[in-house]
Length: 52
Image (cartoon, rainbow, N blue to C red; front, side, top):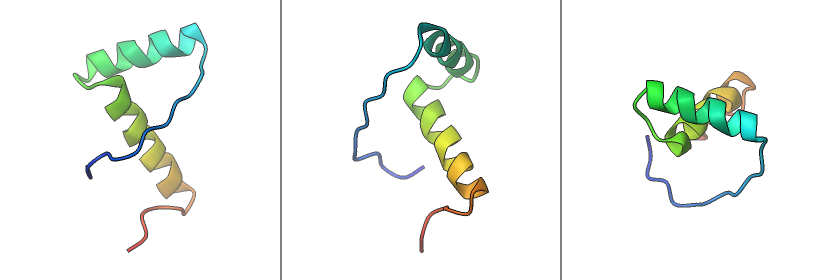
């Protein structure tokens, strides 16, 4: 994973935060790392992956 050098603040429901936290913990990752991985996969699936 590339170096993270930007920050994004988002608002979400308590339930979603709880679910993200539980999933991250089960994968032994931080919530931030999990969210970045999920967003990367989403963008790649939409044809908007990393540009060379």
